Length: 298
Image (tube, rainbow, N blue to C red):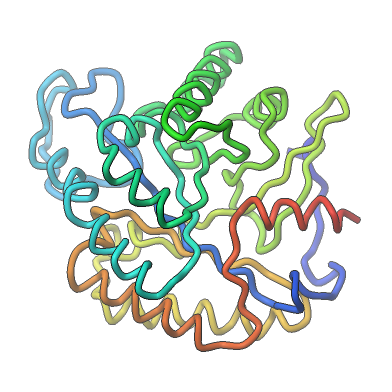
């Protein structure tokens, strides 16, 4: 990866703040995703099934796990949206474009709430890493996503997150060629950083987190809502303290079929209330963070 970015210890970074003298950029990420009930060429990307069916052929319908995920746009999304609106908090959404086509009422509500939208392929099955040896096929998937993104939102996307964060070494240069200004696939930092992707083009990586994320905490580890609250709160507290020296990013990744459950949604709301009670916090969009990185490139 050295051709894209240099190793930079965070303790050697420039001291300072985010815009308006803030210290910690908080990004609340809602992943709006879709899956097909039958998908012969892929698994359910994004995390483990809630009810694994051992040995189920890929050309058979998987109703338990499909319907578990579809709880998100039918119910969980609306519960979380209500909390977000009550708390008046900025949301950054990674969007499978097929979500906008299948669930237009949900997308309309998110647009009315002034969410930021980041391209997240057309659906979760499209893992770019399977196209790692075919740059043109990967580019075709991203181009199709741009086309559908424009259809459902009316403008071209500026940011990208690969399904399951599973991009390729070609992804950054393809994104830059297609006019993207930032991506969020790489989890290796607590600050944004500028990548040199060739031909004089630059692309910012605004890190996402698969750690501070409802899927691994609730589904992989089986933590309770109270454990989720305490774990995420401690991560936030440490980052807020450290950010008084060097500005940092805190990202909370959410999925409506996971965090949209009643008990979990209340924990999410309680966390956001806690974040809002602290000084030096900036509820940011990824585009704003990417802009800061370009303006402050060393």
